[in-house]
Image (cartoon, rainbow, N blue to C red; front, top):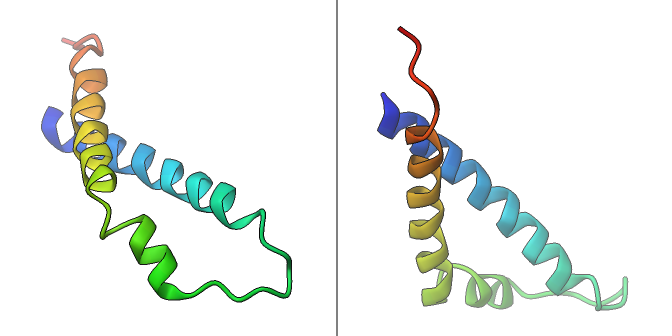
Amino acid sequence: MCILKGSVLGTGLFLVGTFFFLIAVVRPFRSNTAIGLSVITGLTIHNPLFWAGFAASLVIGCAIVGSWPVKG
């Protein structure tokens, strides 16, 4: 159960981070400018650092959940 909670927490942290990263990257463009799907996929799923960040988020999430005190 600890691994499941950590994975959910890590994935949530990763999704929030990805959302704010994409907003920060897209914001400098003018409002009438189109952003291609290839730009977004190039910044995310085709980028090895994206996957390294995902793995790190899972590890950090599991570490946080593992440090929670156990009731019992």
